[in-house]
Image (cartoon, rainbow, N blue to C red; front, side):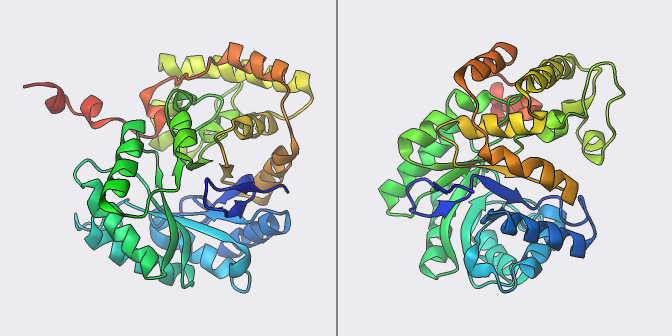
Length: 340
């Protein structure tokens, strides 16, 4: 499998990053099977793994830690902090107090002395960038973290964080992890160009649009059932016009993939990897079968004509709804921020 540099760090990673969100109670509760999936990914040439403290409340990190026993030096290991890990309001967020405490907890769960890439899972408008960057910088200087990045940040905050780092003499975010797929193209407008201009790597999550691009969603068929669809009706409920439009686009893309002689899964992942800003696409299998269906996508290249046909189905910069973006700006979510 080829390698790509992660921004300007000089670190070389595979174009497929193994996402570990589905290992544990959220997806596959069988630890041994999850470990076999991780080992198969490593044997296939993937050297990049992404997890988070909040995935199954630490269980995912524990599984990854067990799987990497004896193989830790060969893997670029990424995890994240921000999400709620308890009922206490201070057991979440981007404060120094929580970041430092939770980094130590992640190191214990991962059974490692260092994290290669420590990411802030979401922007927090209640926490000053310098508070977060100062804590992360101290973790780098303590040898607990090699690099740090952001996830699902709005473009204005990506720029603001870089400005604060420069002005205050902090280490900077070296990469961003946004949602990006054929069905979720909003980041093409600003996030991806900003990352290119700054020299940040990009690790895109959900290249299969939360399962929409697996081939299971087709017009004229019963929609597949899943716990994710039950938890997130805004993204899956077909009574919503935005999701109906998404289904229409998915059907057209499935037919296009068939004409091109490839699976819809391969088309979707290869599309993400064609963008010049993207370092790696995160694939998050729950089963070995799902992993095997995704691995070959890294070897594909899509020709300009095929990319043009994709653009005709889903125009560049398109998101079907706010729910697909992974982040709703506070000024949109809260009426109080729009009214005197």
